[in-house]
Image 1: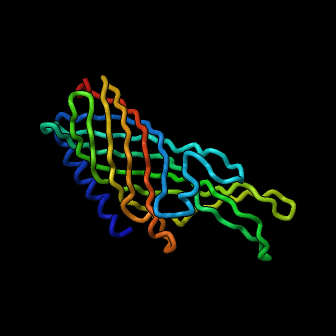
Image 2: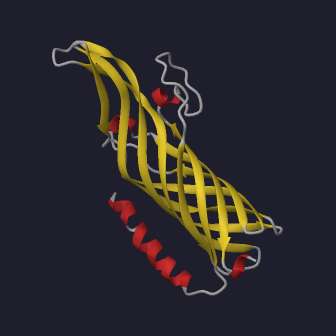
Image 3: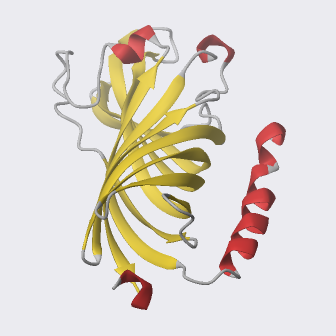
Length: 227
């Protein structure tokens, strides 16, 4: 956490500097997102877009969110963009076996993890003609709240809901955004991968886990600079 906490004030300083520039392009965004976990064999068995288990939890609908961005003055074929997003992300957690107070096994279940995240990123955009661009940069994502829903189990003849706060996720993650975007009029469309660079979990057993978010994003450009 401490090694990443310097990023927020650094982004704020760059944001303040860039806000003083002219010819900015502001956009508002809506997105759908999917989370993929790598480095963990158990989670690798349960991809987000399909399900290989037999307990009937079914296909998991992904996350969604929105944000705002602005792009600084164009510098040849390049421009610098900053973006702030708020989103809900979801993924299947690794399987967990529950026991009662007597040690009797209640069963193994796979939880659905739902997170509330905020991310801040800066990226260089390489213009490909007048309608397309490629981008790469650096960002940080903070998880404010994480809840895992394990569904319901029968305990002593009663149906019990198993929904718990999840404190295992790393609260702050550094990521590498790679994006392809297109622009038509005031609307923009983007496909972006935010590849995790640091630990996704704070548990020692899952130190190799990396969390990656894939975004489909629609933006609307504001102001005269968008015309």
